[in-house]
Image 1 (cartoon, one colour):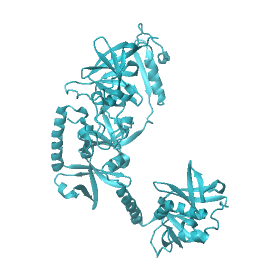
Image 2 (tube, chains in turn brown, orange):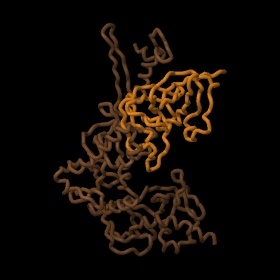
Image 3 (tube, chains in turn yellow, cyan):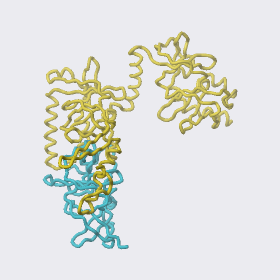
Image 4 (tube, chains in turn red, purple):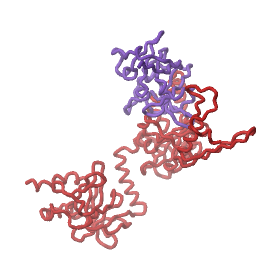
Length: 398
Length: 154
């Protein structure tokens, strides 16, 4: 019975270039098995055939909210979704305001920037979407636009509150349909560069819907511009501190037995690097780390004051300890390792400056876990990291 | 070895084009296309081809021809190109023709450079010239900058 799945099995009387060659059922079987399913056939003469197909559900299925904008459906992944807000027509004036033309919505006392999906996508639509570019369609579209603009003014507004990279914003759509489990299909290369879409999916009625990439969308709406991002980082930091006043700190032993701390979220990784894997390049310690050369900076050198004292002392000697504990710091341009004497603990603590910094590279001192601890100024270190490698090599040249 | 090659022909704005029949997966009537906002103009939309999402490219736009009149429904040539399965929209399909290499002539230099990269040359058929399309190139989308190109805005 399962003979029909064999390639080249054919009962056709006439074989042509394209049909009757006995591959059809073979293709079915291969494809189903490729995705990990099974297919089985049972047949009773005169009664019919039963084909039993089992297809696993392990394809990329995500829950998504289906929304409509400009008559087309889009899927918004639930992971980015925070809440749905509907502003009724009458109350609209109260809720939605503008800051120099940029619409915002007052959500529980906080301002939520609004992004109109229609407008975001229409920015390029003149050329891009003119796909069905019959002039008639274009005319219809302009009508639609006017109509929509009018409706935007007088009708209820549906806001999908989304989160992208920690920043909240409201996406205004024409209609909120339903939540659905959707199968994510990748977009072809031609459309990969449009960051607004994460993929496509086929809806129950066989039509194609696009999946929105919330982060891409936010970037397009320049919600996540560079400056914003920095603000966002600071904001998030403030929020993290403000929320419960605590943040996670990595405590480590600084030079000469002092205690130092650095916020955990500023670190890329904590690493143990064996002493014999440290090499010397110029007069700097480096190590091979994930296929790249990671400059190592000893904490004692990173702090200006100590560096002067220790220079010439052990500047060139390789580490003697068997294992180095390294905090890997990263910015966009490079990463480097900060060699510390010993990583002590990770604690959650409030950060209240209790005394001002006594040296460069330190933000302030405060009492953490009952000991006076210096908080390392990581951004400053990262900045100086670029500058101070060449500086460190000067003494060797002279 | 006289190499005869099979071409699947189709029409675009009354011009006869040919694509190697080996590259054609199938020819289907055009279903509903899902337009993709922000996409380059040649991208007509996305099509559901038996559960596969396939991008449809407007050949008329790709080849800088006039826009297809609205009453003319396009046909889809589903092509296996280097960039995956792509659907090319044409006006009408013709026959499968077999041509000999002798009848081939490369595109003249008077053709714009971009078109020359898309049209390899012509086969001189008895009654007309069949333009040979470079399938892989035709299935590529020129990288567009942040601002969409406005060449097709009518």
